Length: 92
Length: 416
Ligand SMILES: Cc1cc2nc3c(=O)[nH]c(=O)nc-3n(C[C@H](O)[C@H](O)[C@H](O)COP(=O)(O)OP(=O)(O)OC[C@H]3O[C@@H](n4cnc5c(N)ncnc54)[C@H](O)[C@@H]3O)c2cc1C
Ligand SMILES: [Zn+2]
Image 1: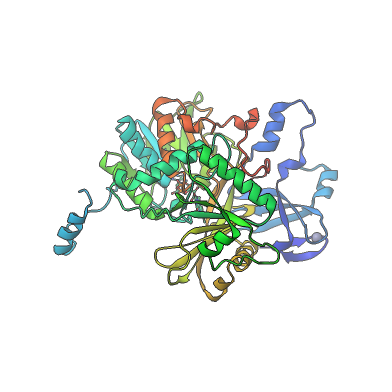
Image 2: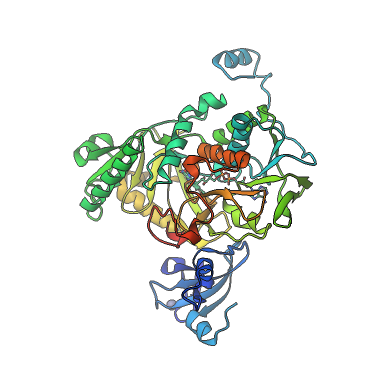
């Protein structure tokens, strides 16, 4: 797998670290909502198909990336800087 | 027919013509009392113990591919009882005892070989933690011995003790640990379950669950609808998918674990060695191949093939541990999809759907659990009670905060 970092260009997988589901960007607002936090922390849809996920370019520019990838084929469909998506607020 | 030396002699003299298939390949009936989804080690063992320990009849195991085609036939066959946490240690201790009597129990040669498992330490701190682990194992009733660097020099002379980055300070030896022939475990349980009347149905994929009012009454399959009031899932890497058919979302991610085997070599590695600097382990099969592996690839995937960085990591660890391995050629590598939970420990429990039970989340270490998992899952299915050695493997432990986190890495399935 190679990942096309929006800042650095196409680089080998070895430079990137998987940070988990994109769900982690939507932290529950209410600190006391135990059910929401359980869901946020533990429950994953774990799809066989398109997965929205976070990677960091650990051994490159260190940016966090939001990637849509097919977990059956490893094909990457889209890559964005996580901070851009976060400020635009367009999470699925 | 019971296998014995006499049968081998008799059938050998008759040219081997009288050997029978190990199990019948059945077509599904319209309904069963209990259906187990998944014909891997855990599903087959569950069916066997349902019939054997609980005298239940009318059980089916439904497998989408061929029996033994999942992780039960892809793992690196290591069997051990060296867990630390209360909840895990009694379960794996029970499992190792079942491994020790499995060949007699199943009347099948699973080539169980208690050749010892050696875990290495590379610092004073790591030696302390190995000593602590050893004490926990002994207090659980299992065996552990702390070996010094000098003792290791005799025990594994080919290991590079003076690697400048990861010098070896000593190791913890678990003599009752070892390896078993993985396919034989699947075949042995399949044959034994078949002999007790379990229907083993291959090439039959479960495609849907029939759920009404939070109660299950059957499954849809590629061979039609099959009814049952109790259904157990034992589908390893596919756990999230199958549970999703009943609308369940689980604390699980699927990842790929790769493994490697070298060309056949003369006997040299006579135990299983776990490196302590990173996840790397190696043993030698009876055919002579060095069987080794390391960490998972660390990103969600259902493609049973991995990527190069994980392979490079494993090869570098191999070279650091035993430089002589650089002369051997890698024969092949493969991957299997493992169901990583949020705390790295498994789940054997009921689900919020009445009649639907879950045995999953075995991560990269469920082969050694095969007999105890079958034993405890059968107990749960038959009695609706947790077996005492598996009572901490609950599904709600995540929301209640009773995690079983051996690696202490938190809710990061890729780091367990
Ligand atoms: C490379 C590798 C090395 C490993 N090494 C070790 C080790 O050294 N020691 C150890 O203890 N563990 C090890 N493991 C882990 C161990 O192999 C697994 O935890 C264990 O085998 C899982 O249980 P199982 O045998 O029942 O799984 P499987 O054999 O995978 O059985 C699950 C079955 O469910 C079937 N299934 C899935 N979906 C459906 C459906 N919809 N309908 C019908 N059937 C379905 C699958 O086809 C499969 O046959 C390793 C795993 C891998 C991949
Ligand atoms: Zn970058």
